[in-house]
Length: 399
Figure (cartoon, rainbow, N blue to C red):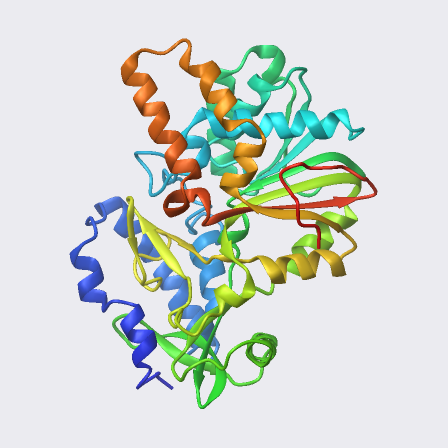
C-alpha cells in the first residue's frame, strides 16, 4: 500500500521533479547502465508482492554485482566523481593518521595495517609514505573495479618496496594482529527505514508502473523494535518522524572480532550520539545522496548511479562492539583526533617547502578537516581494541 499523509517524510525528500531539476543529466551510457538495475529491482519487487525493504533496495543499488554503485565501473571519488573524502582533501589526513599508527605500534601492537574499503587508495599512499618504518598493509576491498583502480593508482605513486607491501583481500583474514582502519565505511552500510504513523512501521520500496515509490513494508521487524526501544529511552518522537536503523553493526563487528587476535580498530565517519541522531527535530532522518558533487535526498532516483549514505549512530556502534567482545578505547571528534595527533605540526613541516599559493591552499585544507562547521565536529573517530591495552591520547572518554 502506498504511503500517504506522511508530510514530514515527503517534505524532507524533494519531489522527483524538483530533485532532477538541479542535478546533472546522466549520460546515455549511465542511463543504459541504470536501466539494467531498474529492471532487476522491478522484478524483485514483483516477486515480493509489490514491496521490498529499503535495506534490500539500498543493498542492491550500492552493491549488486556489476550493477550497483560500488560494484560498477563508475568514477566515485575526487573531482571527476560524486564526492570527496578526507584523504582526497589533504595529504595531512593520512600523515596525521600515520602518527597515531606509529604510537600504537610503539606500544606493542604488531606492525601491520588492515584497511576496509580503501576508496581511491590515497589514505594508504599517505600512511605508507609517512610511516617511520614500512609495514605490511592489507586492503579488504569487495569491489573488483575499485580493487583494480587502487592497484593502478598505488603502483604509479609508491616506490616498489612500499607497493610490494600491499596485499589485497576479498574477505576477512584469519588471526589478524595489528591496526584496522575504516574511513567512511560505516555510512555506506544498507539501513532499514522506520516511520511513525500512530504506531511505528518499516518503510519499503515499490514500483507504481512509472517510478519507484515509498510503501509500507511491515509493522513487525527488528528495526521497528529497535526504534521503539530508542524512543522509550529518549524524547517522544512526533508523528511522521522517519529515520534509519542500522542492523549491520553487530554482525560486521562480530566478523571482524572473530578474525582478529590482538588488534586496535579506528573507525572514522560522520554521525551522532543516539540522543542527537534521534532528536525530535531531525524528523526526516539522515539519509543523503551524492551525485556529481550535488547533495540531495531522494534515494529512489538514478539507481546505481549515485551514492546513498546514512549517518552513524555511535552509541549503537559502541554497544554492538561491547557485545562482540571489543573494549572501547574512546570516541572523539575528527578535529580533536587530528589535532591531538599533530595536524598542525604536520602542516608546519609541509609549509616549509611551499610557495604562498600552496600555503593558502593548505590552510583551507586544515579548516575543512577541523573546523566545527566543516568536517571537524560532524566526523568522529571511535577506537576499539581486543587483547591489547593501548593508550590513545586523543581519547579522554573511555566507555
